[in-house]
Each structure stands twice: as C-alpha cells, then as structure tokens.
Length: 369
Image (cartoon, helix red, strand yellow):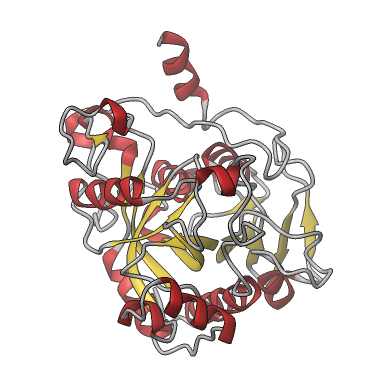
C-alpha cells in the first residue's frame, strides 16, 4: 500500500516513455481533505500556477487538442483521432519534442493551436499533459484544453455516430468492485461500491457555462451515419427509437476506465457511478483517459477551460451474439468476426472533427469564452 501511495504522489511529476496503445496502467490518486474533494469547475477564484511561470518570449497557446491515437501518421489519409484536426489547424506549423513525451509524439503548433497525441490510458494521458504544461517554451495560462476522440456510448442514450459534449468525467476504477459471483444479493445488477476517500480525483464536473456555450455552437452540426450501421442498430435493438434515430450532438457524462469493458453489469455500474457523483447529465460514454486529463487540468488551474468532445464508434453492450470470449478470448465469434464498429468508424471520426472544429473556431473567434 505504501508503494501504491508513493507512486500516486509521483504520477504527475514523472516522465515515462510508453509505447502508444500498448500500455494501459492504473492511475491511483491520493486522498484529499474533505474541503478539497469536490471538483467545482465553476468556482470564480481558481489559482493558475502557469501564470506565475510565464516568461517573455513564450509562444502563447490558445487551444490545445489532445487526441489519443492515430492510425499510421497524421498525414497519411488513414484517419484516426488526430489527423483531420492536424490537417485543419497544425499542418505546416512547427513540431516540438517534449521532454518525457510518449515515444513518437510531438507537439505540433501553428497560429496558437497545438495538437499532441497522448497515447491511450490514464497514465499515458496524465503524463503527456503534465509534460506539455511543464514545457517553459509555451504559455498555457489562457489555454483551452480539448480532449478529443472516439468512445463507446451507453445503450438507450446514444447511438453510434453521436458526438457528445461532456459535462462531467468520472473514474470507473476508483472505488471497490466485486465479481458478480460473490454478490450476496442475487438481484443486484451493480458490483461497484463508493469510497469517498477517492473523491478528490474520482470525478470532475466541468465548467457548466463553458460546456453550455460549446453545446449551443455545435448542437446543429449535421452528423452522418451509414446504411450498414443504421440497419445494424435497427436489427440489434429491436427498432428502438434511440437506436434508429439520426446521430446528433448531445451532452453527457463520460466514464473513464483503464479496462475496456462491456455488458449489463458494467453498464449498471456506470449509471450508478454517475449518479453517486451527482453528475448533471446522464452517463453517455465510456473511454480510457478523460478523468485523468481533467485531474491534471485541475491541478494546473485550467479546469475551467477544459473540454471533452467524444464521438461514438461502438456501444457498451455485447452485440451480434458476441461474448467476452468471442471479443477478447479464443472463442469463435458467431458472425465469423468480432467487429463492433461495423463501418461507422471513419464516419464517426468525421462527425467528431466537425463538432470539434465548430468549437475551436468559436473559441478562436471569441464566441466561446
């Protein structure tokens, strides 16, 4: 336990070279005193330690975009989370090596907009953002940080292709969990138990005024789907209204876990976690980085300008007759493959790009502030 606590104290100060998409390490945080446990992004007085370290000659960053992975390179046409935004804002600009950065990642900067591929998982995300904010060549004192990328969406709330303006990020891993086979209440569908000692890092409510502004400027962005995805959702979920509607921009809570999970029990856990932390909007997405990024932003006094925009490429349910064994193990998939996203991935990446572009342009133009 002492070793785990020591590691938690060091997590945001150390620099690691981790291979992208191969390491998803647990980020365990220290308990804070009760007075500091509630993360209130709307607090009027927020000390910004970056202001004190600003020096003459620093390059001022207005927007910092943080995708998590790319397919190939940022300019090869194999679109992952960062390529479309890189080509829109940073192509042709400067590329900087960041001390302690993820192997192969650079900070791309052009005209006040920066982009960095953080790597997947809470550890990669937290150490990447910390390394960037500690680089004295840049002034981040007024920066809007935007976490962007794909996610799984909660069934009965989101459909594949939706894009979400996230209003709260919560940690799926902090607390206590039991195996359902150990539960004494056979009717229980939740296996997660709250531990208030983690609350200082287990959830972050984002700036309501900011997320409302971003939602207003993005809610009417036209999103696309595909015929295959539309048919699949219709067949898989019995023609339910939520499943067959056109994709749209929604607000919601994101649940961050280092483990990639699915299924009715974990779905019920995610709903319970969001309710436990009094999130203003329903559980909407699951991903692997955002609560860690929010915690770093909070520690640097930047939580009031931290945004999360996520697009749905799959759901938190087992679909097409798949099971944990067919998706992640050696069991044969009933459909001959274990595809979860069908053909929606590139379309959803385009959707996420369009919404993020609308938000960034509004920030740069002074419409959002």
